[in-house]
Length: 266
Image 1 (cartoon, rainbow, N blue to C red):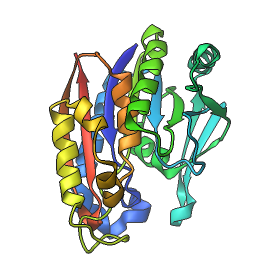
Image 2 (image 1 turned 90 degrees about the vertical axis):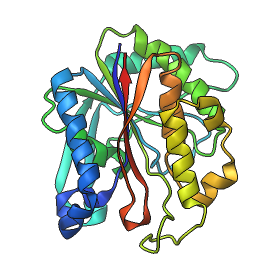
Image 3 (image 1 turned 180 degrees about the vertical axis):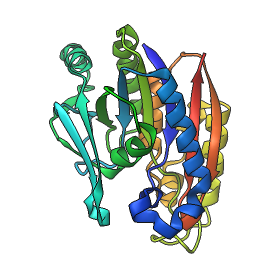
């Protein structure tokens, strides 16, 4: 059963060993992470489903990481100490494989066993899954450059599997908004970056899903975001599920938009 859902960013500087003196600039986001972590500790979910946009392989289909064990590391950022480990959920994985065998019209899943987690998965899990004992994990990667409407439909397919499970399932979609909000950005500045972030946040707050999936692709490309893929997959999973969107925080230090939002299931 679907028990909780949230969207959060994945800033490497939010990890103490990497951020160090920069942690203060992320205080609002870190506070939101702590709130979500406390809620998950109270919920005690059986399984976390993490949706990450940072898969290295550009696939036109949904990738489901079928590794029996996951290991997250931030060595690429110079942090040799921070590591996280999880076991996969074989029951949910089996249910998804059975569903995949029944799919038609090219909407099949790709199952790939990749024990090493990318930072788009590792960083949210480092914060949100802290002290969660015995929780299982399943990691999903939305299609690269697929129409947002396609992601939404994929989410609806996933919903059927997840709602039929007796396990308490917590959904976490990971992504950053525009990477071009100020001169501090490592990839430059765009005059449309703030427009993208404001537009997306308003659409999420007011559940304007039809408008969101019709968002001008040129705007998202200009903003250089990595949020829409995970978000639309998450929104598809929540299709017709009663929920109240709640913005926990939004800030943009370092020129990158960091939104943390909870979808309070009713």
